[in-house]
Image 1: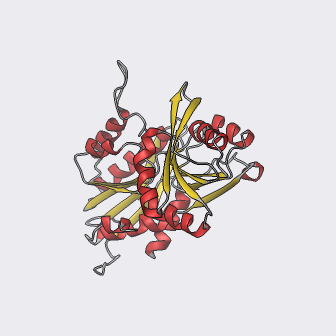
Image 2: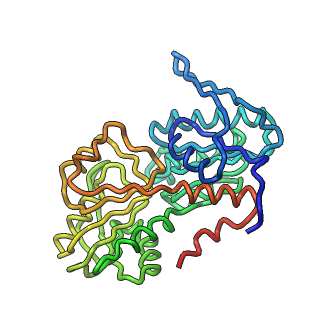
Image 3: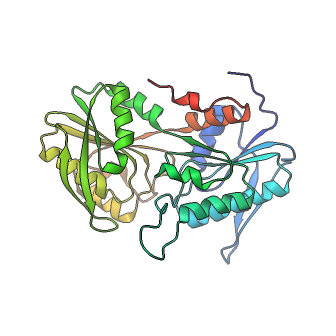
Length: 323
């Protein structure tokens, strides 16, 4: 990879996930650049960039959760300030793309909010977007500016390999995650199973069959996110009923709701839940009371390496040559 200079590279962070931004900056070997973000008593957001950005290559790190409305408005305002400060290029780094589940018109008179967010990012002045594990790949087509789509797969694969499961099998908790699960099974050399489900409400799921043999296996369940825990809980229960030895769930994003927190505290189908730090944990989530092991993996080195490669015009795709 070609050498790059940090002289004109600048990293700014919003308030949604400053811990992740600090880790990314540490990976890049430089401190976060100064920006003062304030919220007035009437709810308005204001920011002032604390140093010159003229002619610089700027990256703004802001997750679309928690409080996606506040997080996005803050991001738009930061981008506008940087644009008016004459930054040469502004890349919006969204470790978690909030509103990604509203990606299609599946009933009359509903919005496609994932597309609206793309339009607003461009209107605010973003020149490029860097995000991770979109809920639906077609969201990439909502943008008329370059978008780099990272996957937490390399980080998760390393962790799975380190566990040395006796009889692993990859399981997709629903048909929507089947393609991703198939990719994991190929790279790990394991079998594949799929749980068929039917959603009965915003936070309730009825799982009704398992396609594949999980008997006596250590189930490795792969999904892009969990908010209420409904899909993971129902799929894990179904796997155990079909003779699985244990269930280890892996999700990239963890926008946990109050209902999800309640479910995870009381339902004990999982042996382990592994999440990444694209979203900070809820402050009221007492992980010491969980009936299973919770593991958090950091994707900061992955995002940091992607930023380095974008800045130096190297290939981002090479990050996923991880057979």
